[in-house]
Length: 154
Image (cartoon, rainbow, N blue to C red; front, side):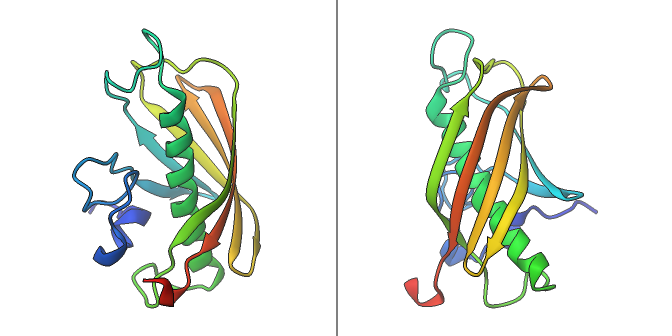
């Protein structure tokens, strides 16, 4: 039996995100999972995700960190409330603040690994830290403040 990703629990009406929405045919369709207390996501850049020959475009890196963080925040909120991820109301988070430090060029010909950690949960706010690795080396770090989407927003 294959484990479901955090994004697999998103209701259809909240599944259009370019980074993780399964209903966005043009998107990345990233999948995030728990690995102990960290969240993990793997992504293989396409040849057109290029900055300069051989390296990934920084905007892709930022958007991967963004979407992995919002998914991690939702999963963490379910954990905090000791609820299954398929229970209602559904938790969805949006990015309020995104800081990315690019530490070294990220090779385009490898599978990228994102590792997220919950820094803090304060009510509707979840603070997430993410490392983006290529070939086991940290290429970028992100700090993301996410905010829970109110039920009446949609």
